[in-house]
Image (cartoon, rainbow over all chains, first blue to last red; front, side, top):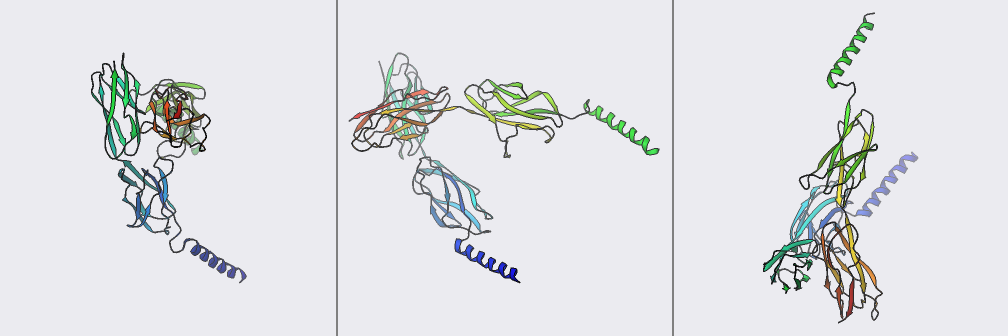
Length: 195
Length: 214
């Protein structure tokens, strides 16, 4: 008799604890990883509601883990979607974003790509091949060229066009080579070579 | 009496059929696998001290198959390691697709075939230098659009920071870098020396920045 009372009261205590913990919201996390968050405005929804704006990570990478503040219950259906995107995000692709919860859901993957802008400019008086770089992007500008185009750059990213190799017998300088890409193409990088 | 005759006959028949199959009476296993990400020459794999040179693929980006000449018998162990790294790269036993652990060491026969995964990555090194004379807040350095940024910590107001070392994210071998001043510090103009180059086989630490009053 003694032990059966114990069991019952233990079960009751457990139930009380569980209720206290999760309230009526359940006890399972719902989240995963997202990339492309460098600005505010990334709002996710679950089953069309529970709007949650993903905080911008401080390290500038745009990659962060996220969890909905509300917990879900075991056996709940979930369907996470992107409701609105920051202005610099082009498209988001979602993986493993819907299902039925058994354990904490931590495997949702949301990969967002940025809108990109062109990075172009003009060259004058170029008599031999010139090598321009924007970080790891390397472009050979042929002799006689008057324009050049670097690889497209994500919105809000910095750019810095530099000369890796001057043309033979010449020395070039760059104007407007440094800045941050806005919502428009950058077309004013000017390279002037002499003599 | 009858059964004692049948047994030896059976054994003989079995032995004969086995010999007919393989030419040998034991199963053999080839220690083989593939290397992914290999770009440069010089990779030497080793199994039990026996070297095997693996050349890069003719098609860039393709995986390279390798197989050791010495065959193993059932129950023999193998342990394939990287004996010599290729130029400009670091290779190590990788985790095969769909698996959780690397499979470079095991016992022959536990799996039907031996298919070892080795993966190689291009070496990458940090770039950086020394910042001298900084008094204002807001200095940001950038390596192009995708090479990362460095934001200098503002020195205590009214003081000049002692020269200090900064680092930008690593750059892979044979990749260009071009460090520019993305934002000048308050009240100062900074200039940069040795800002551009192509990454070699060592970290770059001479991209120095000097700041003076505007």
